[in-house]
Length: 265
Image (cartoon, rainbow, N blue to C red; front, side, top):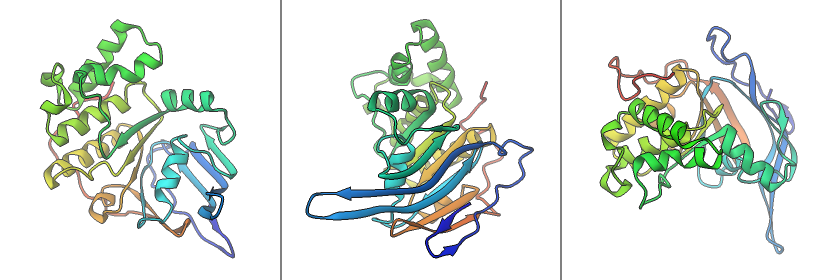
């Protein structure tokens, strides 16, 4: 599926998961991103062809300037490509207007950021409710969903706390619950363990792994090999192109305990 200029490259074939990954969620066709500063034109992405199927657990890797963050911004509808098509659930979103992209972000994409991006003077519960407010979910339903999600990430006892009363790992779990609030088909995590210690990083990656096992499509941008090792497919970028795309045959195993994710319903 991936073709680099001048040569053909095979794309990793998703592992057999009983048909869960048979449906395309993301398809990029000849995607190009050029940053034009007036005096200088910089090629951020160069003819990217890529498919991610529903239910995959993918790592996007690369050094600074490789194009991985540019790709994440486009996948998250935070930026638009200069050329090419981006299909999300079969809809070409590359040419949508800003308000249309905003609606896509709210309904179809959950974001998890390195710096958490929680609202400091708002309780944990209210932070999780924010995406549902924009989606015009009724207050009672917002509260019900928020409490269910916080229970799933092991923070039901912290619903009234503010973010500055939580550890870094707990804040990131709140951010994950918030990202799942509108039940989006795609979860995008940009360096989600970058501000965490090693133990909290393990907890967050195990949480992502359990979300993947429940059927959530998870795409993680990282520069750390030990973080990418949890995923089932690793795509490496260099100079705005895909350098490699491979299946991870031996992902880091998740603890046999129930862990932080109690259940998804």
